[in-house]
Length: 255
Image (cartoon, rainbow, N blue to C red):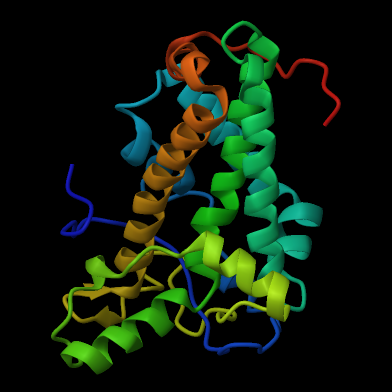
């Protein structure tokens, strides 16, 4: 499935603070992916399905989407803590923390349905921050300006913008206390809101495509980390995460 030449995408971000500038918030209407697309379906869910439907079974995919959407509705963790604070470094820290939880729960995800549930749950919560980073920050604006400076305005392919380097941003914020992106400056929460042209695309389509690509990449990263940590057992762990059943409701947990 092509990721860099897609023209029927959907929804995401905006902002114009450069390195070191704080997060001053955005109008409520421009905060993030709308919860539903124009056809009434979950936009987050559509992004996840587009990226991972050929990788995980429908039940496990549904769990990831449910966890992502629950995180998006959590004002304490979602709005205020991650995207409403003084900077976007909380988003980077959150992705790193959730990735570690996924990896820890994966230890016995092949034999424990509860661990499998929590592993996929935290992966969904990780995806909330990853996807909304592209709709709530000025990443698209900053990176497209770089490409326009190199290739000429209107002469570059927005779908070839590199994905966010989460490891580098994590190192940068630990060393310097900030990351080189701020709140969105160009609205891209919906197709109508983000219809401003960006070369041969729009801000909305570009941001959504980045979210699709990064959702797929995050699963690939998790697979690599599980293989590196659990070696021979990684085969059965990954097979279980992709195809084995999960509990219908969240098991008791120490989360």
